Structure formats: structure tokens, C-alpha cells
Amino acid sequence: MVATRTPRIVVGVDGSMTSLAAVREAVSEARRRRAELHIVHVRAPVSVKPAPGSVSSPVAAERRASANAAADAQAQGLIAASIQQAMGELPAGLDVQRIVAVGRPGPMLTERCWHDDDLLVIGNTRTRRWRHPLHRSVSRYCRAHALSPVLAVPPSR
Image (cartoon, rainbow, N blue to C red):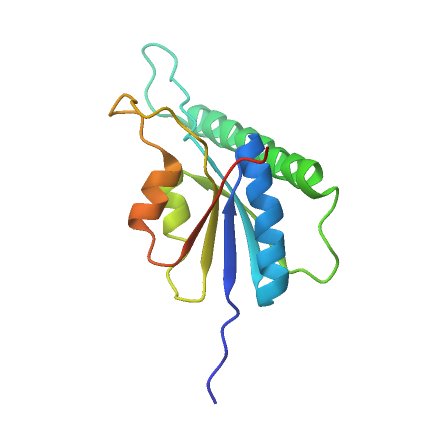
């Protein structure tokens, strides 16, 4: 007997207006495809500087763990606020996973979608044509590197 896999709709949120539009589109796609909805916020790693002259200690490890827990709680709050602002509340009957990832947004989002029936939904900002080459767009990264289809949602008017 072969187990059937439920397709996933993965949407990245950062609290911006374009990510709210992406959440609305992702919810519609998840309903239409009867897919799991994964709402992902990618946060930066927490850096806790040790006290001058100290070596790694249980106190430093505890401070790191506390800082990471606080950053995760803040990220979960951002996900909840994004859902609230985009939809009011999520529709009943939708399987939703709220995920906090740590790292760079582009790679963290693209590695969550690797099957043909997965879909990555991202907000697509209208950027100026000439940008500094080191300030890469998450949207551009995802479109170039994702193994699954990517839906780039333009900002709403």
C-alpha cells in the first residue's frame, strides 16, 4: 500500500504588505488544491556576545537559549499578526503549520518545497531597476532556485 502525500503550499511572511497579499493568495491555493498550508517566517540567528574575558559556560548557553526562545516567540507573534491582518482568521478546515526558521530567507523557503505538487508563494515587491548587487531580492532568489513552482504575488493596489 502506497501512502499518498498531501501537497504543501509554503508562504513566507515578514509583516510587509506584499507578504500579507501572499498569505491571502496562499490560503486560496491551499483551499483549491486541498493542501497543507505552511506559513513560514525566517529570522536571523541570535548572537549573544560573551562577557569580556569569559569562556563558554553554562550561563552563556542559558543566555543563548533564552535569547533564541525570545526571538522564536517574537517570530510566532509576527506570523499570528500576519494571519490576522491578511485574513482576520484562517478558514476552518485548513491544515496550517506555523513555522519559524533560522537563516537566510531565500534558501530557507526554497528548501521547504521540493515536490512538483508543492507551491511556494512569495510577495513580489516592485523594486527599482538598478539596485546594489549585494542586496539580493528574496523573491528573485526563490524564483531562480526553487525546485517546485513559485507564485510571486504582486503588491495589491
